[in-house]
Structure formats: C-alpha cells, structure tokens
Image 1 (tube, rainbow, N blue to C red):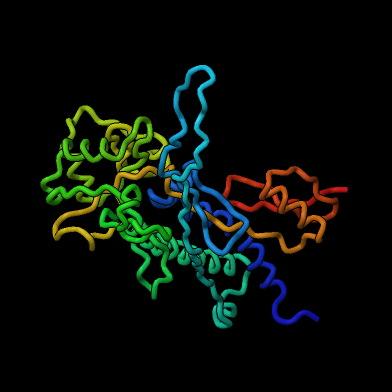
Image 2 (cartoon, rainbow, N blue to C red; image 1 turned 60 degrees about the vertical axis):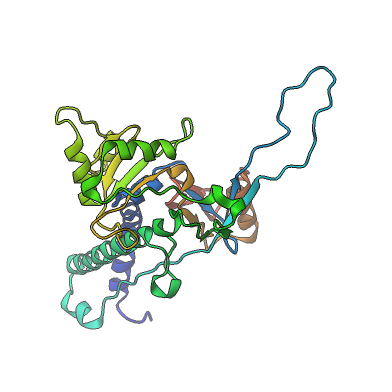
Length: 328
C-alpha cells in the first residue's frame, strides 16, 4: 500500500513537471544581463570537470609573415595561448507544502493554485538574488556567490580566472575603466571615447547596462526626434536606446559600491567574452551502453542512435533538457 496521499503526490509531480521548464526559461530572460547572455552565441553546456576552463588567446603568432621563393619559413614555438579557470557556482531553492496547507487545500485545483503560487514566489526570489550576484564580486555568503561583473570588470588588476592582472605581463587581462565624475557629468563624448577604447574593428560592445539614473541621463542627452531602439530587446520587454552599435538599458541591481558617491556605473560589455556555462546532467535511466553513446553524442559531436526502449536526451536551445521515448 502506498504511503501518504498518492493523488496529492501525483498532482504535485505533474504540476512541477509542467512548470519547471517554464521557470527555467523565465528566470534566464527576466533581466537584461540574463537575456543578453542567454541569447548570445557564447552560452554553452559542458559535461563537467573540476573547473570551468576557458581558452584565451592573448598574443599573435610571430611566425606569420610574407616570404619570397624558397626562403625558410620560421617554425618557432609560439606562446600567447593560455586559459582562465573558474570555480563552479551552485544555487538552489526549495518549495515546501506542509501538512496544514495540504489539509486546507483539498481539491485538485486548490492544490495546483497553492503550488503555483509557491513556485512563483520562488521564481521571483531566484531572479532577484541571481541577478544581484551577476553584478557582485562573489565575496558575499562566505565567498559562495558567483564572481559577477564587479569582479570581472576591474582595471585595478585583480586575479580573475586564475590570471593575475597585476603582473606586468598580464596587462591585456585588465578591463578599461573611465571616471566620469558622476551621472550629472556624463556626456555622449565620454561614452564615445569609452566605446572606442574597448572596440577593435568589428569587435565591439554588444550591450550597455547602467542604473536608472544613468539611463535617464543618456535619454536626456538625445535629440527628442532621433532615437533608435533594438527591436529584439524591446520585444523581450526591456526599454533600450541605441548608442552606436549597442543597445543601452538599465538594471536596478547594479551596485554602486565601487564608484564615487553620487555616481553610477555604466558597463559596456561584449557578450562574446561573457559565457554562461551550465553543467549538463545525465538522464538517470540510461543503460550502460546508452550512457556511453549519450556521452559521445554530447561531448564529441557523434551521432550514435540510442537503443530502443530507453529514454534519451536531445539538445534543445542549450538550457532546456528534453526527454523522449524511443519506439521499437
């Protein structure tokens, strides 16, 4: 005999299974930085590892040169390639229904309403907390928070990704920072200088994020009848105004702890170099043979068919796991 209320458990399970995929999608599209990272071409899923390793090219190949006839071509071993290493971050939240709540919500519709309300509460909390972490420096919660923009965008030369930018040989790893003197002093000329400083050819900022005050200041500098927006961001629900080739928007979670009193940070970011990396999970019900095939398909680009009768994994859009049944 099954313990507890099996009908209640089934309702909860069904509701969670229907809601969780939507929750994942919503969390990662509810704030401008989330949206920019999730919709860029750099979002990736990896099978695991002790750390997240990101290859970096910081120097040119000195053997690249024109030559004449049978002139000897240099074969000098090259440096200029390294890797940044980042620790994995973990984040979780629980949704709990106690016995009294179960007793007070007897019908199926009431149970579903209760659970969806609790999931929505959890969803909004996750969005706010994770979004705040994205702009932080990772020092809160005893260092268990992720290293966010405050740690990554720092011209002082801090240690980021295991690379000490304080070293003279690692100047290339430092960010570019410009003191504007506060929101009131912001001009489009200042913004243009910073934009050009962090641009190389067509490698340019893809998004500009600032505070409400910074956004409103920029808005006031524009001619009222000449304003352009990024339609994709606008369709996603984010106010924005174009500056050169990048949409500019705002986020209340941006910290002011590292700038002068009365000023607000304005970040010009290229999401080609900001990756949101997620760990891929193995389905629990794969046989040993199908697990082998799954790993090769996921990690090495193979296309092994999984054996009939077992659940298998298919790639969706990079952050949604779909499980389907293979038919005989």
